[in-house]
Length: 262
Image (tube, rainbow, N blue to C red; front, side, top):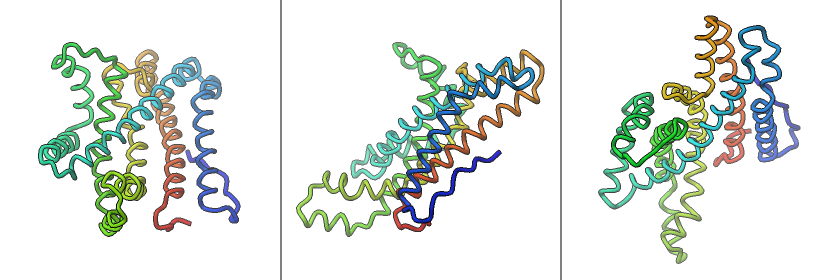
């Protein structure tokens, strides 16, 4: 299955084409989330009777992705700054976090947050959705940290020196000069991490989150028809990742630093 978006007029600027693509792809995503139950209801059993369940599971999957993705960007930025900090304990803490998260399976992290974290902090009461969001956010944050760190280090030092020579403060130099350029460089990797997070969110079913994979498993167990259920689940994931990929490509074109994309 592939999603073909319109070809924009050649006279349009790169930014205009990218903005139009993002608007169209976002509109398609909204339509998928709110109207998916209608075409699925026409499908034969066991898909048709469970069309509303598939639609609800898809919405939960997208909610997991969006919430975890946004929090993961913030965590990644903090970890990247910590790893580049002149304060040794901050560097050690950020490096330890990235090392642990990238070196352990996401499934183990999800189970740890859901089962072990409340035991370590008895006053902490987390729902299954919140537990999944925390695990996914910290996981993608570790990968975002390395991408953002690379972006920060890619900004020429001469620009920082020039800003300071003009009397700008360290904070002003970072906010106005370094950070915007670093995020443009890191943006493709960060956006791709968020798209991959959509598929990784399927592991939330292990702690009871009723997302798309969980819905498929329940229908399969109730009807003993794995083939149509698994195919439908896979096609929905494929459709969602295709739309998100179109959005990510448009974002990359919109903020392409060197103007290499046509």
